[in-house]
Image 1 (spheres, rainbow, N blue to C red):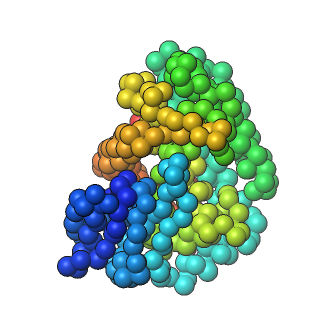
Image 2: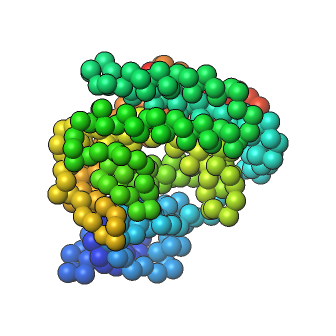
Image 3: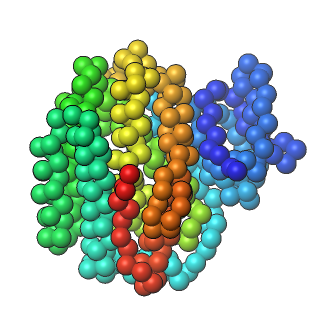
Length: 331
């Protein structure tokens, strides 16, 4: 089974004996059997050449680069793995026809709100003071159908996020991890740093899954298709943020796996240090591998598989086979 490989050390990545070989600056050597690599995430300063890129392309392995603060900055997306001119045309058609685009965008927002609601209901049952937020979520959910444009849906999704984030303090009850307000560039506090880092990991995980389908990641529906390279992964992430990223964050903080000392301040922002990133990634990968019972297909599936199934549902919708309904957590 292939896995995501994360490299934090500085060094050189080469192709050697028909597989990948990494040598750190202090001389530590490690082979990375290519058949076991789903995608590569480079956090350290890594040198590589065109031969490596060609090898990764032939093996359909995606490569992601992260900056000094641990945020995704770009990547190497090999040439399309599964080409389908028919599906690309359908995807473009659904983007260009306003009514079709709004329908899909509406479903992404509906899924995002419902999954955030599920998380809040979980913590309400554990006596967190989030009942007011749940009521507001219900109101927002009722309003989804009334939104006639993508811009209106984006605004509604923003309102949902504001309500949702404001409930985090009641869930966490931890003075070291106060929400205050959402800040991104730079994140002004530790909780914002965790949200940004987790979202960054989720965006790349979904991009890797899109690569295994016929979908084109450049054509999103809720997020505009513009000069940004990818947007479909941002759309799909809205559904999964509450049940993957935010659940990971709550677990790390409530179990005191992360603490204030795992962060450092730089140029007015707060960022996870290397040790903190490793801890977060370990928990994130653990979450992606964990399984839940998915009634739609009647068996246990991992969260990573749930993402792939969501993409297949979207493919069926674009081809006119089955109307798209977003995943809503049943657990």
